Length: 254
Ligand code: 8X3
Image (tube, rainbow, N blue to C red):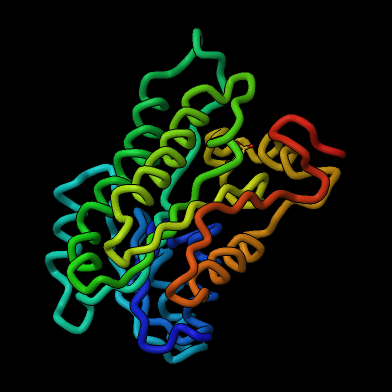
């Protein structure tokens, strides 16, 4: 099954897992609505994908922390883009790795506002159309940190536990509507995740992925694509995808 004539929204599409999903969906024939904070990157990505796969793409600079901006993106979509088949809620980030007693309030706000509230805002905006058509799928990219906590992971882990709870809640609330919800929890994926967490400290960030083979963004995009292409009577509710060398958030064979 390909994604020909399907429209896919991807948040956090400018890098990492979001970008890999954009590549995979474009390769499979989907039309893409790409959303991220960094529009210069989206512009380059859109150009590459159009050149390579001749797919239809629109992109929007939008910080999902702000509901009015999210609503504005979707209200400006033309008729041909208004039927959204898939929403990949990927936008998310981590800031800092500090004990809770040393926590930085701005970091906490940014993680909770993006990972939890941003996901809710986009979902709330896209869902009515899916419910009306009795068709659609939401894929929430959460994390192993949504299942376990680790020292100094506190608020990031809390935000991902929330994502997981929201996925489960959506599965309950949307039961019978025809809308499917998949939750994907990756372990360590080599992306800009750690560079952003450590605010550009590349030496510290690189260490996170040394001495073992982490997941690649394409590995996760592959799992997302698997969920997206199941027949309509099947929902993959939950996937935990880990590097073979990672047994838990803290047990890694380096
Ligand atoms: C990222 C995985 O273990 O660094 O979501 O929190 S972890």
